Length: 280
Image (cartoon, rainbow, N blue to C red; front, side):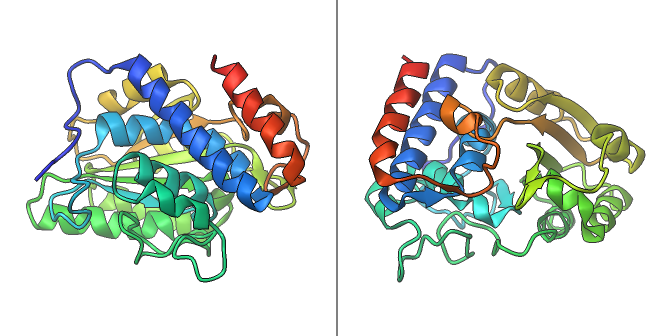
């Protein structure tokens, strides 16, 4: 059994940045093959996923259903392009399969299904992830497991009552083995988030969560926050991460509307070159 990533005493920041770049490369290759995809959100999440899968989380790539694994719950199922990239980088999915992303008949659709190795929940309909993560965390505590649950959900999902019901539940049941990661990128399908949700960190704190707010595209800040939230103290944990859609590719970062990106196939090569220049 090749169990990975009990958190080391000191993170290898350079290696984690290299992993994040690899994730962005994989995502760009997946999107370029289709000319479209939820690439901006995926690029924004790359640093977080690198920090989780290659520093913080405990899992076995040879046995994705290992009982004592840490769980990563991706509530925003349309971020699947990032999920598949990290699962391939971790050795859970074959990198060759990534070329099928979004194709008819592929098992890698543009929103996640839980029959994909390494995927914990069906994504697509938003507002469900935190509730499922609370249930997983409570179940693990009742079983006496040391495994933890990491749940990503979006700022847009803070517009949904089910998210706040789950937040109350996590605090009520003292799920201190649960880390919520709120991806605050400021966008939803048709433009900016419409409902007033700020101040997010203060609201989560008021709901009984131990909360930190960071730059989600800063790997040093991510691994520091994850380390600070490891201690069981009866409170669920929350990282409010501010991310930039398209992070790593300035042309995508500069788009006014980046929720779903369609670009002519001839332009993707230039964008991939831009990614390499930014990290050269």
